[in-house]
Amino acid sequence: MNPETIEKPKTYTLGRFIMEQERNYPAATGEFSSLLLDFTLAAKIITREVSKAGLVNILGVTGSENVHGEKVQKLDVFAHETIYKALDHTGQLCVMTSEEEEMILHIPSRYPCGKYVLNYDPLDGSSNIDSNGSIGSIFSIHRRVTPEGRGSEPDVLQPGNRQVAAGYILWGSSVMLVFSTGQGVHGFTYDSSVGEFLLSHENIRTPERGAIYSTNEGNYNRWTPGLRRYIDHLKSEDPANGRPYTARYIGSLCADVHRNLLYGGIYLYPGDTRNPNGKLRLLYEANPLSMIVEQAGGAASDGHTRILDLQPTSLHQRVPLIVGSRLDVEEAVRFIQEN
Image 1 (cartoon, rainbow, N blue to C red):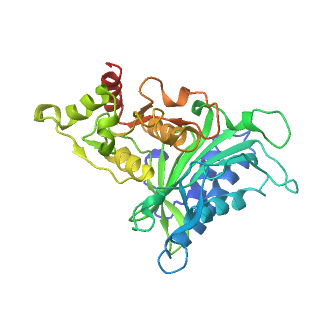
Image 2 (cartoon, rainbow, N blue to C red; image 1 turned 45 degrees about the horizontal axis):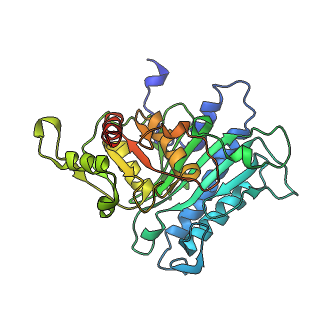
């Protein structure tokens, strides 16, 4: 029997998966593997607090606003600080950036610098926190481009096609970590009884076409004519071609993209007359999720350009995002470009 076809045991942990993947690269130093495992420590700590939300003083707003003018939730701050402190001292990173901070996050001078860069959205879907809705954390890892020093903006402002890993943690009916290192997409579900992420979704592949569309139709009147025609097209009756599509919109980017990743479909957060560049951040949201979806066989575009080919120009750059099943994204882009 081919060993690759043997069913993975129920004790197949994230740590074991990373270790076995590392063996495929004889020259590997273990730094990248350690970085991924350190990130999972932060995920477990955040999971502990999320599970107590409503029982301890972790819900509600702090009274301040972040760099985007959004009200900061207490859990936002906790997640941001937890991820930073779990990774600042390890020696694997030279610099970090967070959606919650205006400037880059340097590694404290008392700790060594490494060869990797972390961009992260500590808590996606903050508006769902107080209603017990789905939330997530998103991360993106690059190799540094500067030859030495403590890391700087050129290390951070790299296109998504240079990511060496990307992923997200989703807190929903269960806690899942989904990530890719450029060799497919794999999902791990957290088992609190043993304190481990266990392999539950190996080699995720998204359908070429789905039957779900996810977007905030409250913005419909501010969209371009081509985009409005596309949504009307999805809602039109054509059973022979799988229409109408079903509308599903949670309002948490991680949760909406994750559902469509598994079932097939398309997520759209386009630009409009009020926000021409949309709302989502390229470094912290669009790039990592686009890598995940592409690695699973899907596609991601801003309506004109592949997301992963965009060159970032600022830390908090916003982009329109159309992501999901490949044929759905291609069709949406055709409608948008008809304007």
